[in-house]
Length: 230
Image (cartoon, rainbow, N blue to C red; front, top):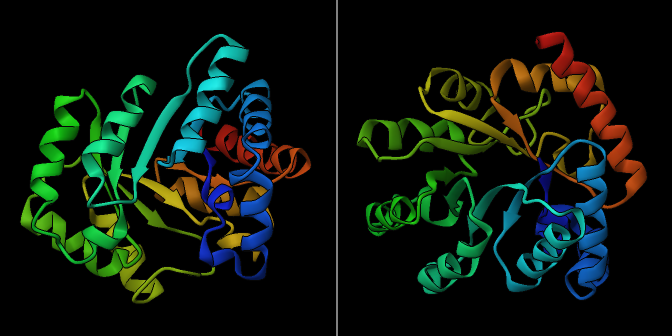
């Protein structure tokens, strides 16, 4: 999936974050261009951080290519959860994830939000920044979700509290896993072997991409790994 964290200038991108936000969040046509190019290259799937400019840019891409994407949306807000859920309703998302800020602390509203996600016809999911702790905790709690969005890469970057516990939790859960931060915010190169590791342990991957050249390199490596894994 095409990840959209760069489009909001997420903090993991360090000094590049401001430039990414200026280039994309404040210029939605640049997001639309990458959405369309992604579909042309065979990836009509997006892990969408829910903010209105991103939703509108994706809707515009739908209009250009004449079809909808597979959408795994992540709602960042607790206060505006209902508003953001309504905002993405017209996108008909297949997956809606609750942000790690709520999942990692087992927010008391999770069960209520899961119910609302199911009522709109999407599969509920939980995002986590601490997969080694959060995945076992929510599995034990029995939260009615179908997937986790969790950091996963062969170097263990962002895999908290440590690589070993995070990888063990990802392996042992019976939920689907969508790997986020597979390139560790640009610290790792998009290589076939890297995606081979990702697809050995996860069901899907979301990669934040900021140019058509990055997209071509990343998708080429990912498709090569997918072909090897069948």
